[in-house]
Image (cartoon, rainbow, N blue to C red; front, side, top):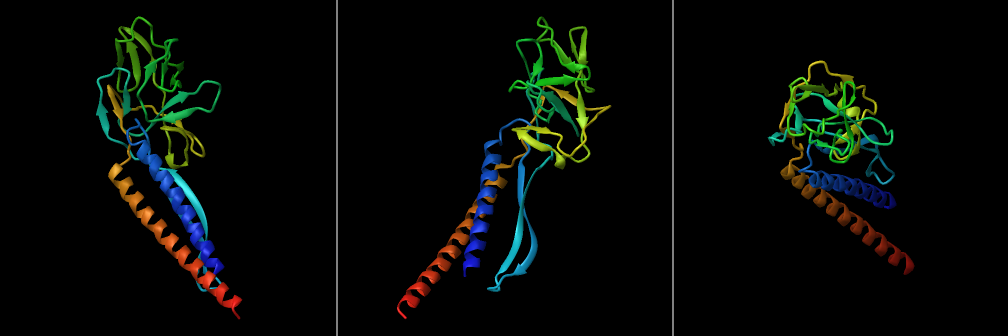
Length: 241
């Protein structure tokens, strides 16, 4: 009987974590370049316990779904999307690990450096991309990632490919670090200026998952309560003997 309580409590804990992740996906449905997280449980060593109830060792796993989001046209010359595989390479301040992202909504920092909205430097093949202060509205980005300001060539965006994106680790929002993956520079990327890649979160799908998880959680609660009531009655009966 106590094992059933333990099983129900473990299931409820897993469902709560899944619900939290679904809520996070919904919160980022409008975040440029965001990749939804998938949460799943791997059951190991499945068996029947002493009370003949199913039991297993559970390993919780989480991975980002790297499928592409829809393209949105913005006409902003500093907005860029990747029309295929690949990630922009960006560098946080303070010497943190290199980050990779599909979110190409960029701005120009006070020092003229092309940056993400949260301050990461956008990297080119020769280092951070520097935009001339007198040419912020005259930027052109070729499909191979070459950036020019007027007649001046500024540099070429550093775009990398990753053989197994599932091994990348999320850092914050739409940015990742390499993790177990090995990023390699892309020779022929497809950069689309004036466009951004939207989140690949489907609000309808996430809401459906949230409802299903909530119902499963409630079912485990009822099972827990029923087992507790049975134990309470058994304890009372024993006390009367």
